[in-house]
Figure 1 (tube, one colour):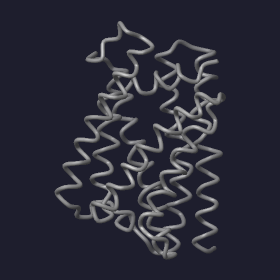
Figure 2 (cartoon, one colour):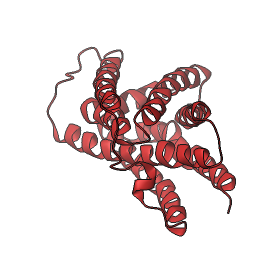
Figure 3 (cartoon, helix red, strand yellow):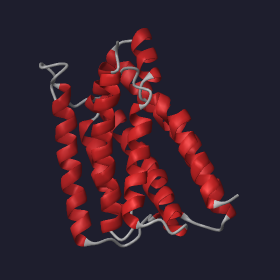
Figure 4 (cartoon, one colour):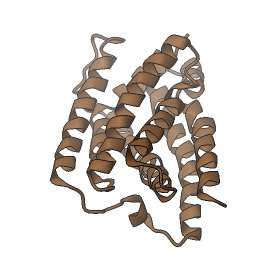
Length: 227
């Protein structure tokens, strides 16, 4: 199987398996249970869908004799990328959590609860898995077929934005989610290139935001896709 064929399959899996987590799954869970348990199950559903996509990716890598190091795992990075990744993670966490106040002005963003711990930890693990696929594997595969670095950043970010928004269910929801995800995707992909293709700064920017801002990020998602 060629690299181009694998990229087409991977993109389809992200759109068709992971994408429905950002819309149909949210609406279904909100229709059968309260917001907080719905958010917890949303994260579980995301992890399951992502595990399928990552499993396919790792199977391809094993067939080619590749390891996690080929994705950028534990690869040395640059100090600038690590600092920027940390700052982005802190900013995006604050941005996401504050956004929840739009739906619930009385929310306690500093709450300490088992739900917050569970969703923060599981969500952060999910973010790492997602970065392994959409930054590590996808961008390095594009590099192998001689796609310029800037186009790798754009392609990865567009796909990231599409599967986060295409199932939203409304034009307004699609546009808002697409723009926010595209900006975030460009930042994450840019950090991957800036950090010499190490996942470390990307994980800091992504997982740190999820770890600090859950469960409010997922609850915002569920509320934003409601009819």
